[in-house]
Amino acid sequence: MHRAIVLACIALLAAQTPDPFVGTWTMNPEKSAMDPNHRAARAKVHWERDGEAYLLSAEGVNAAGKAVKETPQRFVPDGKERPVPAAPGVTITVTRPDPHTLLVESEREGQIVGRATYEVSRDGKSLTATVSGTDAKQRPFKTRMVFDRDPANP
Image 1: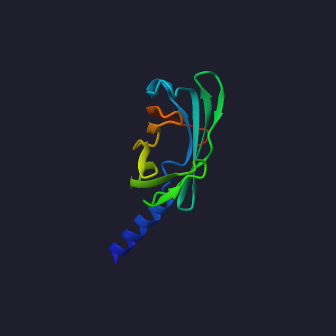
Image 2: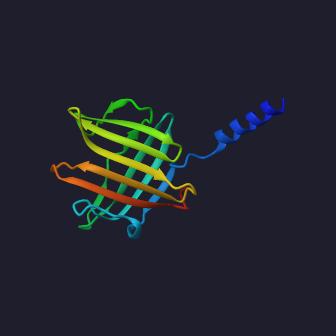
Image 3: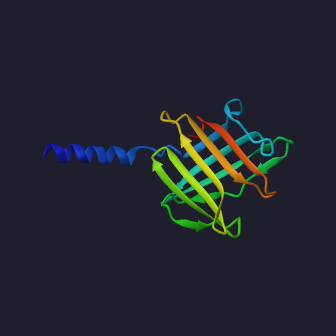
């Protein structure tokens, strides 16, 4: 009988645990290592949960001082290949190897064109986005951006 109560309490706590990704994150430039062709002066990302999917919105200012707002991305971490509406011919596959990590792999015509890892620290205070691939100008790139959780919009 006690075991059933313990299991019920664990299930209740798991249901109440906030998702580590959800919230607003601000780039920490001192901790980030950006590709020379893909530099941000400022960046902010916002993660939401929509049922089985994550919605990722990003905006900021590039190295030239121009405001940039990315098309929101939808990530379903179920390991299934899905088309990317903003990039015809590109598909993504998203997995979640643990509660703090999302892995995204992009393909075009059967070839990997990009990889991204989004990892929230165990204390929930930072998010590291490591992204690599080939950009629209066919240049290889690799960028690591570290974000701090926005305390005003956790």
